[in-house]
Length: 128
Image (cartoon, rainbow, N blue to C red; front, top):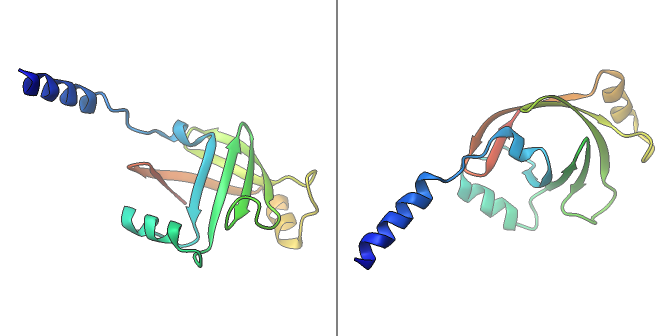
């Protein structure tokens, strides 16, 4: 009887498991590898490799702070998010937080960077 109850409980839990949507990536702290990845194992290997360049993004409301190689390492980039829809947003650099270099000024002058989320695999979001 215990086995049957355990099976029913497990089936119930897995059938009600929530799949992630674009909205789940609007706020929080996210890890972005510097190169394209193909599998979950590859993500874990890159994440644990001290020599791999990676970005940590902290997104809250309409702001984003981006750190290279971990929070507290060097100077972060501060960005403003303009949400186009749940899966698409435009990033511009926040020139009120720091002085922008020529490349960042050019990006802002040309309407920022549009980021489109293309698919979600497990807890990973793929974007262009």
